[in-house]
Image 1 (cartoon, rainbow, N blue to C red):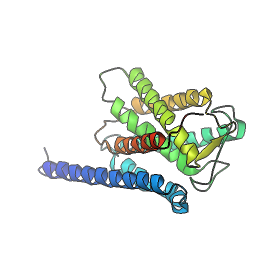
Image 2 (image 1 turned 120 degrees about the vertical axis):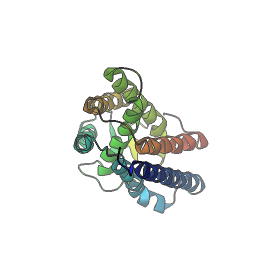
Image 3 (image 1 turned 60 degrees about the vertical axis):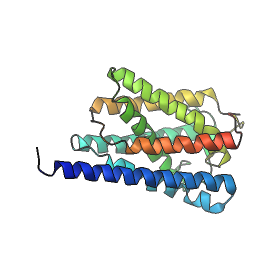
Image 4 (image 1 turned 90 degrees about the vertical axis):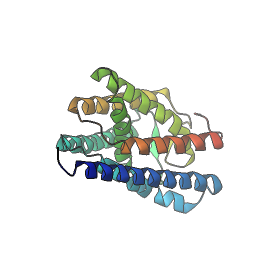
Length: 227
């Protein structure tokens, strides 16, 4: 056993603690700001940067010591995959339903903000990491991760619409959207489980949990429904 192993473990614990407090404070401030002044243009301007400032460190500090290259490859490929799926979805309406992105999430590539692909990665990574520790088979882990990500989307959707992230053609979220969310999440989760990456850092799940609390509080506080 390396002599500096306890020191490295203590450093990782301190880093995770700092990151957890950092994420909790940022999302708590975000909730307060949206409830107090939901139309503040500064909130819209900073949203994509907020997702990157919280999500990117979570992804980086979670790079495992074993299979790190595969982990990075999964992240990059998954980001490109979800961005391509979203572009196809916006252009055709055949995947998620008829919708379009607003300006809140930043510049678009073929109608889709690039940050949306990255946030897909963080959401699926967070749930896949947790589910990878469950005492069940690979198919079960991937299924539960995809189901959790789909449940996350159900909580998020009405708030995302209210905040101008995107809008649906008839102002009603189709069931088709959730079916597509499950399928896309299942593909990503199955790939993650197949990599057999050891889950040692819960930072991505901390971000996902913070986002879930953010959307849940705003959904209840603003009295938002699915349609």
